[in-house]
Image (cartoon, rainbow, N blue to C red):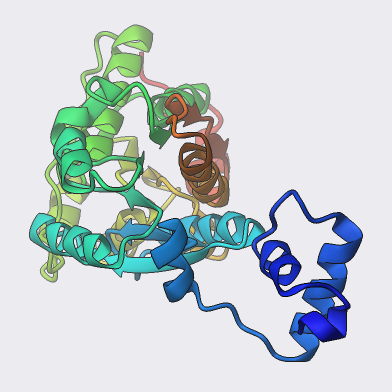
Length: 338
């Protein structure tokens, strides 16, 4: 390779490690020759010398969730742009599985770790992964509800509170007054969204308390018990923990002759791709999922490069209004209850 690039062996080594002693023209010549010869660097051997693996660990809670897939996409795009590979693990929404994944990361020594939707306490997790910098995306331990216990550095969130404020304002503007929240799994985002709705509703209409329905069983509500209860109560609008829950309830409410949005408006959260294609198309709060992943990788790479973890940030969300909260028959004031 050195002969083909007309440089010394030492220069080849420096060029392939992107060291500043090699000018750009020479580096490109060495890389071109290396690719032509099919050279692949031995990162395992290199890691023994420089104590770096050029890999990032990413722990997600559920590989089947579309929003998690988008976050992974953004994370991998940013990592690849800096020539890092990603080691992916699924925690299956189980703290014990998360701990085992962290042990696996510790064995393989990635240069940094990102935890998405972790149910583990943040300070405990950092102690477990003390050999690498750790970034948290949408931490889900219940103590983090309302962002009260987030670390000042190394945390990234979508702004759920902003999103729920926008939802309540939108529903009130449409004449909906009796609002209900359908709970999620009792994690930080679920508690944060519920409390944000309650505060916004209290500000706009103190006489209309928020009705909260309990979460569906983890294995689903095959009997439609929750849908039957909602059909009997007939709130004006349902705000669901996420889009998947919203779709399940819309489907079950049809079995009780309740149509969305004719009889009840429904709002989700996440803006997964199916929200744009469902019947009716779903009003929801769009998380900046790809950007969350990209910013998480960028924060982690900054910590690796500088030894200093950047400050925590919250990214804005966007209310996306679609058919599930727009009922032309209700616009004449039929739903307005003061």
